[in-house]
Length: 143
Image (cartoon, rainbow, N blue to C red; front, side, top):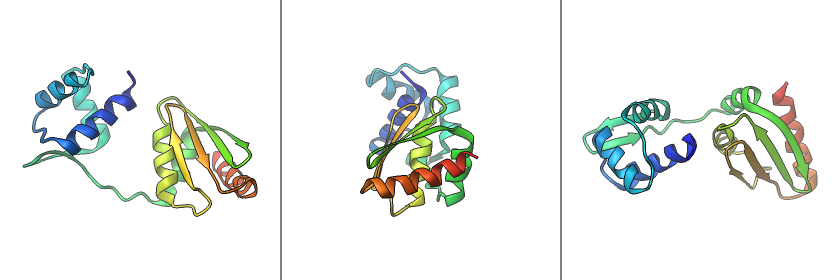
């Protein structure tokens, strides 16, 4: 089980249940088959920017700025490859989701959608010519 998987489960739980304590969160995760220590949960809560409200933990809705994509791409993007109308981004392990979210938040009209794994993002464009343009923009961010 990866950190991104565990954090995804945490987000799903706090969106669907009232989770008021780390103990409640640990028990709910255990029901989902995810074991996590209090120290791990505390770190996840801090990293994810969760806040405790009277209704339980909630995620802050942060507005992503386009420069977030630039910062994440320059730090975590390792390779950009094109295959027809698709682009495959290789990132540092565990950072594909954050790069995909930043790309989605940038709302590039050339990008139809993204799909992220642990260290790979699939970017789908409407056609090969547009994909080449997107690939060039992303390559420029690597430096």
